[in-house]
Image (cartoon, rainbow over all chains, first blue to last red):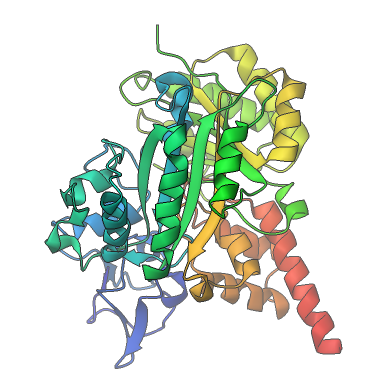
Length: 241
Length: 214
């Protein structure tokens, strides 16, 4: 986002509307820090500017800056996945796709969330750590796959490394027995990161509506624990007739 | 995958916070979804969903229901909130009866949602559970602020704006409900629980007032 300097009246009303904290005063006018801005569009959508001085910059849809918008603006459709948002449908449509099947587990690492955002170098720290441990199971439709230069090293394309986004999700689905090694790898990379991440795991429910005991044991063994809330797919979906 | 999963805060408060989703699957059942979406909306309204929306238009707290309905397309994502377990039970019963073939997700505290499924006669298919937040957590805003900002799954709510609203409520310039509605307008999906948010703001303002007295 940019503030059109000739139009801005310096009221500063837009500043608390920026999730990245990227808008500040300079010479009695609001200015957007182009490095911090994720192009999420929140300030513009709010309609808070009394003189319409907020504008999308001409390069907002140009590669590589366009990644900021695709990963940070939920109203935009991602050019890679063709859906809104940072990840894929994952467990939300698992009753239709059976993407996470019997004996499998889905894992998602969302970097930058909650609220802090992140530079794409943080993603590379995780993809490199996964690659070092021979883990090359990132979901093919996940947009992060298109950002990886070399799956064997986990290196991202170098032109992306200075970009910032609100968050991005590394998604995998693997056999359940591989969960411990992946959680261990994630735990090892935590001290290297400059931002935060959320971690989650998805499985089929077992009879009695219970989470498979082996999954819970693996989580505990690797020093993680699960929170009391969860996202539950009710199993109502089906392929159209 | 993680859009509504990492809502945080006091567990009793989270028991007043349920998120519902209708999901079409890309390339499988994602054509001509509007009639089904309208059925979901009708049930959600009948059950009293306090906020819902479509990310392509916005939440009903900001846009008229008719406008959201008119803009429905195959790219729409219909989702919203409930504040009571009984609403979840009614919603699941009615949607199951309609057998629309779209995926349905409920996010909430497991100790409430699983009994709601049993009461509605529903056997869930898959579960996605949170293993929490990791990394440089010292840079995060306060737990109270996070309990509000995490109710927008895309994190469109600036922590600064939460502080701004809370200050205005403390000064008596806004009611907690008015402040919560302002915050809800940032969340285009319609999954921001403004009812719970008003309670959090009210509690925070009251605690500050007590501190000032003490």
